[in-house]
Image (cartoon, one colour):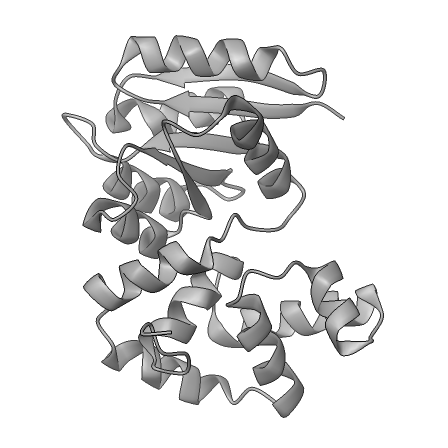
Length: 218
């Protein structure tokens, strides 16, 4: 199955470069482009991508607000992959909090960008624990996330799985670590996301750090 990809970036050179890299893959296809966040909702409605590469810094409407609007207005929004110049950036963290599933740096090797797209399309999130930890330490707000975690009333097993998710382990890796079946882990992860009201693993990991369940200090 071909993964439909869209790109939102105000720099034409970046869009062209990403299109060349993505369209060179047999299982990926660029179906739409936007030069500003204001153009994103209409472009997504028209092209229906599965993954959207979103620049965070755009002139009229930035990637943070564009992500919020997209997730609020679309019944089946694409997974949002932030593309950014600097990883230690409050724009990146706010985009993740707004609902983006992960991020890659603009200097990332093409093969890694392609792999990130495939990971998102496959239902997991591109989570970089060290980067999330640094961002949570610098920009995390604390209180509300703690209330959210308490209200979730996670079971002991779900708590254990959230801790492993926060280290960046995939479902298969968690299954191996706990000596459980992959489907069992998938069910537990789904329960964790549901109880936390998290759209995906990245949102759950942010709650884990901001609540103090896992210390950003390490």
